[in-house]
Every structure is written in structure tokens, then in C-alpha cells.
Image 1 (cartoon, rainbow, N blue to C red):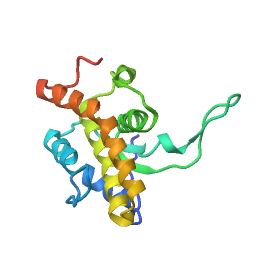
Image 2 (image 1 turned 180 degrees about the vertical axis):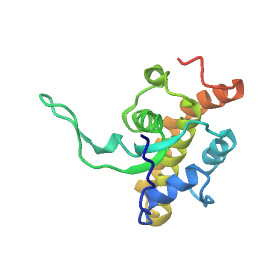
Image 3 (image 1 turned 90 degrees about the horizontal axis):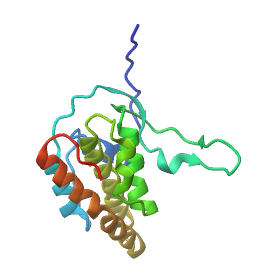
Image 4 (image 1 turned 135 degrees about the horizontal axis):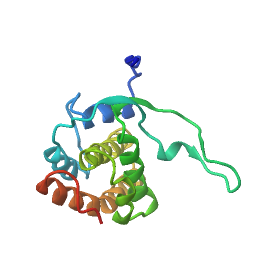
Length: 172
């Protein structure tokens, strides 16, 4: 028996706004240095057919690692999105924050509609950065956004290539 329950409304935050913007549930108001990249990603969006379910929407920053113990999830960010969205978010964060390269993508090659999920995960992360910059206006945050944008460029190029050809294939 399948039980499908909606999530309770999430309190407003930069994360809920970024999520809704990434999934076309709210209109974007980007103003930072990532605006051009975010508009390019917006144009790459195509409808996703995979059904939504309960997923962790911000996994990478919420795992505690230990040399001798299994990893532990220390915070759960519940979203109703396709199953592969969590993996797409981890890939994006690994590339933006940890210097991973596109060779990481084949790890998730079995994820349905990976390219579209990565578009939305990258939009989520860059929109969060844009909103934080809008609130803080700090030079340090601007530099952080610019570093994320630099790290994102190979991924954006991969997305443009993949989406121009149809469904994700030709993983590095």
C-alpha cells in the first residue's frame, strides 16, 4: 500500500525560497554575480517525469564523518522531490565546495533525469548564495559566491552539452 502525505509547510528561509525558485514554484529575484549563470540554468530546465517523494534536500553539509564509525546524518532537510535529487545535490556540493571534478558524475549515472536534477540542485545552491549575499552584502560573501561560480563552470558546460543532446548520457 502506498501512503503519500504532503510535508507540512516549511518556515520561510533562504533555503525554502531557493528550493521553490529552483523548481519554478516562485519567481527568482537574483541580483548577485551569479545572475547570468542562474538565468542560463533556468533556460536549461525541462519537465521532469520522475515522481516526487520525501528526500533529503541538503545532504552534503549535514553529515558527520568519523574515521572509525559510519557517517551520521546530523540534520534532515525534508523536501518532496524526485529520488535522485539528493544525489544531484551531493554532486553539486562536492564540485562547488570540495574541488571534485566531473569524473564524479558517473557515480550517479543510473539516476533518472540526472541532468535536470543537477540543473535544479545547482540552481538551489547558487540561489542560496545569491540570497545570502543580498542580505549580507559582505565582500567575503561576494568572494565566496564568485568562487562557487568558478567551480560551477565545468558543470554548467556539461549541462549545456547534455541537455542540447537530450537525456543525460556521455558521462565523463
